[in-house]
Length: 371
Image (cartoon, rainbow, N blue to C red; front, side, top):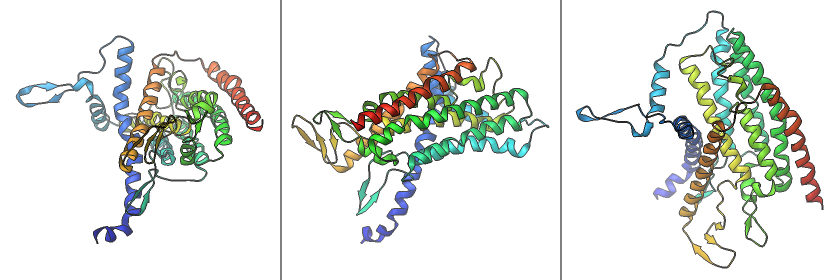
C-alpha cells in the first residue's frame, strides 16, 4: 500500500533528486578544486602549498587537514570582505555581470547525463536534469552566453584595464566558439544524434569483434584534442589567460571585490567541472564501463559476472565521477605546465590552426563514413 501511495509522486521526487545531484556535482567540486589547484601547483614547484587554515579542537590544539579548510576560509573572507564600488560604474550592469558569469556554467551541466536510467517501483529515473533532443545545440547556446558576463563586467567598471580585458575576452571567446562547434560535428556524424545521453548509449557499442569500446576518443581523437583546447580557451585559463593576465592588466574583474569577485572566481572552477563532464559524455563513454552490461560484466572471451541492477548503476555513476575528476586534474596540470601565449598567438592558434584542423576533421570523417 505504501509503495502504491507514493508512486504518483515518484516522478517529482526523481526530478528533484536529479536536480540536486546535477547541480551538486559542479558546485561541490568547484570548492575543493581551488584547494587542489594550489596544492598541485605547490607539488609541481616543490613548495609546501596551503597548510595554515586551522580547525580548532579542545585544549587549544589545532589540525590543518592538509590545507583542506582553505576553501572554507576563502568563502568566509569573501563574504565578510567590504564590497567597494567605484562611483563611476554602471551599477545595474556592474551587479548583473557576476550573475551572468555563473548562470551559463550551471545551466550547461543540465544536459550532462551522470548515470544510466534507473527503474524504481515501475517508474524510470533519468540521471540527467534535462533530456533535450537538441542537447548539443543547447550546450553551445548556453556556453556562448558566458561572454556577456565578462564583457559587461569590463564595460560597467569604468576602468580602462577592465575594458581591455573585456575586449580580449569577447574576441577570444567568439573566435574559439567556431572551432568548438566544428569539433563535435564529426561525433554527430558518427553517432547520428544531438542528444547527450544518446551519445553515451552509442558509445556502449564495440569495435573489432567486441574487444574495443566505441568511445568518442577512438572514433574522433583529433576532435577530442580540438575540443579540449577550444574549451580551455573559452574558459580563459592558462595558456589562454590573456583576459586576466596578472602581470599586465589584471582583467575584466579588476574593480570587483567581496562576493562579486568570488562569483567570477567560482564560475571559472564550475566551468572546469562542466568541461570535464561534457568531454566525458562526448568522448570518454560517459557513465559507460567497458564490458559492463545491465546485468553485470560480459567479457568478449566468454566469461561473465552477474551483478544486481543497483550495483551496476552505482558503478556507472562512480565511473562518471572518476572520469570527471581525472579531467579536472588534467586541466589543473596544464595551467601549471604551459606558459602564457601572447595575444596574437592566441588568435593565430584559433583561426589559423584549430579552425582548419576542425574543418579537415569533418571532411576526413565524411570520407571515411562514405567509403
